[in-house]
Length: 83
Image 1 (tube, rainbow, N blue to C red):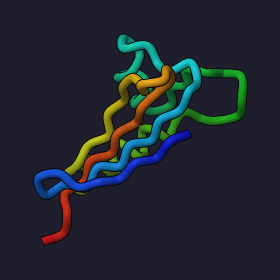
Image 2: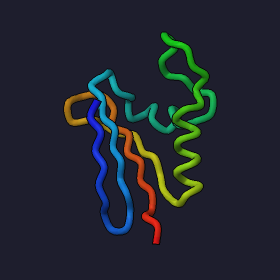
Image 3: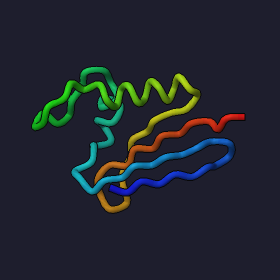
Image 4: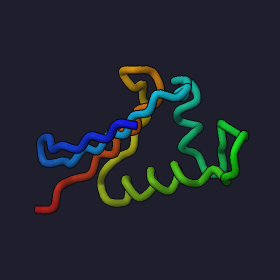
């Protein structure tokens, strides 16, 4: 897991990357939906990414999912900086 944090144009950007199997581009929007679990091997209820996304939007930011450079998933949280 690689974690990076920096600021750009009045926003804080936190990126978390892993080297796992990632999430296919066609499944990323669905992965942010309530109760959706793309991996049923472990315990969970499918609310973690949804809650993180909804909180980011509530505070004027966003949570996006993409490809990590070394394979795997990159989750990017963008939040506005306090004024």
